[in-house]
Image (cartoon, rainbow, N blue to C red; front, top):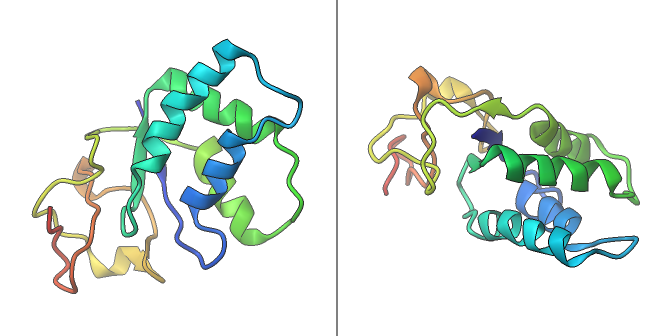
Length: 139
């Protein structure tokens, strides 16, 4: 299972970019490929504002990487590269949960930059969600 970090940069958030990449098949799509993409779309659609990562099974990660590698982008920005590199350089998940968080897990301030965690989870945990200014996950 892979952990993919999320960027919430204005206009280039991971959820919006990746949904577009997976939903659009520029040269058409076969039924078997469509079914594989639906598994990835289910995960992407469940990302909530404030989540800092999401998890994909290895086979689903391969589908997402293939979508990223074959998609023809109409822009070249640092924010776009940041989103795409998070997919391509996804790390093996140490503590994967489908809701992307461990309730009560503290997110250190030094790991947050413009509302985005600067690196992976602390101590192998998977914090995320809205901390409501407390630094603790509220789920």
